[in-house]
Amino acid sequence: MIQAKFQILKTPMFKHQMNNVKFHLLHNKTGDWSDCGTGKTLTALGVFTMRNKAGEADRMLVVCPLSVMHTWELEVAKHTPYTVQLLTGTVQEKLKQLTLPAHIYALTYDSIPGRGGTEGKLLEALLEKRFHMLVIDEVTYVKSYKAKRTQVLTYLADTIPFSLALSGTFVPNRAEQIITIYRVMDGGKTFGRNYHAALRQWFHNVGFGFPKWDLKADKEEEFKSRLFTRAVRVRKEECLDLPDKVYLERYGSLGPTQKKLYAKVADELYKEITLDSSVAKVNGKGNKKINLSNVLPRMAKMRQITGGFVYNQDDKIELLENPKIDLLRETIECLPEEEKFIIYYIHKQDRVFIEELLKDMDINSGVIDGSTDSNSRGVLIDSLCVGSLRCLMIQQQSGGFGLNLQVCHNMIYYNHSNSVIEWQQSQDRIHRMGQRDDCNYYILMIKDTIDEYLYAMMKNKMDLVNALQNEAEVLRLKANLELLLGKRVTASA
Image (tube, helix red, strand yellow):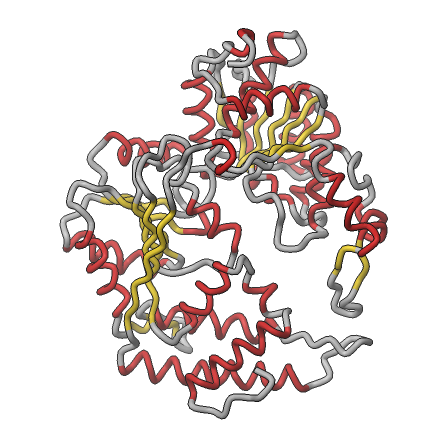
């Protein structure tokens, strides 16, 4: 420990956490972009404790994803003498919970109130509570400056004296969204208070009619230097002796019915890309932009087909052969019987397939998806960590953030998200402090399909939407489709 006064929490902090606490105490409003698994929650609790001991803060508000609420409840109880109150349920229930005595209150981003009607009463109550400190966990949730929750959260952050924004992957899909994040984080001190003025100051539009903002070359050095005037970042390899990540690809092949449907949709996608690559949907410089509203649904259908089902014209599920579920069975059978594991999936139908398999294999499992409330999540995680639960299925869109699952070191991806952030965050649920074993990531893919394409993008740290706005990536996708469909490969690809 650096100084004895840091022995204020029940749990001793690592050196990097103590250094970060010191940094945050030097500024009223800061960000912590340290890697997932480096203990940012404990750091935030250390900052609040120090400010509380100094008489600066008695009440703290935490805004976080639903998947993280129970984590905060556990971490507060584990590391501090403080009480915590989760704001859940209806607006009226949240208003009542807000009157209960506690040091720390937590609510979700989806609960961030609007400025009118019933929701306005909650905003008014939050303001009347006069919080001294605000923690914005996974601040990338506020990347859109137009979103109401971003506007209201910005208003709250401006009125609360101390704030701390947290994210292990703070750079969002588009670089200009950093302006929004920093506006919420520090009141605009780093890049400016007005979004449009700051955008014009630091970026220039290279997409014209289809806005695409690139950082100005003469501003790049200053922009990067400002990123850490009020924010800190610690990489895991700098502060933790964590085990390795091991990626294990598992391949299967399409069945006859799957192959026929897949080729049909792939041909439609190929024609769409070819059309959009040749028609003058262009700006003044001739930059090409494909029609995402036509392309993304076809790619989504291709991903469904590789998972053993497809929605027909009546929006009903049509079941197909499912070699991917066979891959999942083989993968599970390769694991030692006593080892616990996580399965990430995307679609509701994926869950049906996986649940049927686990039941057939007599494996005790649980599910976290968008309908799982905070208390249920906590029960499931506790059961996985110290109970009889061997497997936890997690819908990637709902449980990629904030979960501490280092009791496992095996993670299976039944299919992929389109988001690099979700991909990186989900991996770090098991690759974090407390993990002693190498983390095994089993990637289930069907050969010569979109599965391989999405996995390649994730490895290159490129989101699907961004990839489809990149001419080189579109040419690569087109070449892949040409090979699949037996077409002549274009020279440019």
